[in-house]
Length: 362
Length: 248
Image 1 (tube, rainbow over the protein chains, first blue to last red):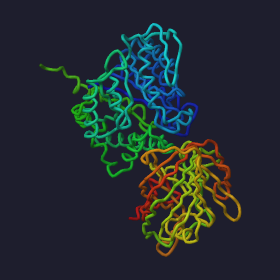
Image 2: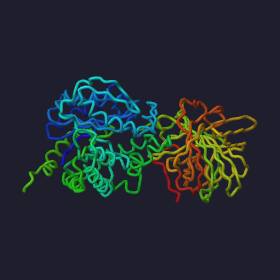
Image 3: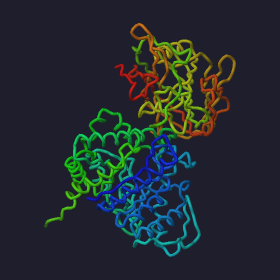
């Protein structure tokens, strides 16, 4: 099993001149340490206008900085919004190629389409069309990376033949993923040979079913790229502490804070009735998790906070349902002091990671 | 921590008085609901109780509804809500309501705390639009429309529950409370279109300062609505996660 960090970069009010800079610097310090300790990935989201919840509109810049202070950890664009009002596909191809070069071929590219009215409305994007634009973008991107010259006539964008430069450093190209929040998106990922970048905290039984269907479907996929990324990642919270009670309570506080902030967001469907966002998706699920009858018991069912032994147990269960990689949120709105976050990372690397890095005995 | 509303509930006047919280449920079959949503500017925080967080961007949801059957007979109802969050839950805070019959006004005030007044409320369908109009005291205080309706699946429409501000008679006194009104909707038909407002008297809707900035969406549905018994009330001055009380 592989492990990563996952950044929303939430910034608590009151906002001062230094508060955003502090959050970014803390994150970079965490990434540097994680790289030294053997974590596999650092992912950063693309979000816009989401007050407090995420101040990370330019993940490629954060990830470039991360790549400059690390040597081995992979940098994940998690995700780039494949909606033309947000990002032109040529710019996506160019910027990701530059990041792949600067990171020495350590880039993974997650793709998605945004799920909040705050963002979609802010860019005047049509929620009805985002699934279609995403589909068009992900089919173009690998070809833009790998073709000497490229031209395209599509429904949502077109270009005459040009050389899109630079080319990605990795050969044939960086692994590609899809953000999976809405039920059914894992099937879209499988059909296109893309990795499933899970962004929900669903429980074991729900995830097991999704992963089994993903594995079944991806065997017969028509990959959009030059290879199939048959990988399932999920997201989790991490707070590891020697004392079980301290670890649990601190992690719980972080999870509650994150969920509470997330529930303040306006889902696309809350304001704009559309077929394109039919399923419940992330936000209602988080509302249930934050306030439902099971809210107090979430930590006992797969969330990674508490003692190393408890976290090992949770991760073994995730592994047993087919998860290949777990990406961790380390903080939310800076409710955990930076020194404690760093200590949690160190303890995780020392006590938990070895349980999943044992050599396979034939 | 997210922003909070700044409305000092103690300064509100002419609030509904609910004799108790023993409201019986109502079934309202085959209701037609026109909803128009707009992002708004102005000091929207001042319209929300301190218990609630604003939705960001601030937005207002206008409802014009025709109820062909109810325990008080057929009536039409218009309401203007500013949408926020009670803790983690999306809720539309009802700024003002206008109902077409005295029986409906009385029942909605007494049973669910709607700040309802009497007026002429109409919901009219034309070939290219559905128009909601409210006239009170001889003045048009609302003229809104869904323009160019297109069919959707009923499952594509999501309604946000309401909350009202009322004085509730309890234990021999009155307690100023936010009352949760969370109907069940069984949608049978749904259409979506572009929202339009040609007349809106903000002051008449207790929405002084609200300025319509950006039209978002409009929907018209046919649905069975079950107005519920009161389940939760909140202290208007405490964050909802601390000040919510379960009634039943």
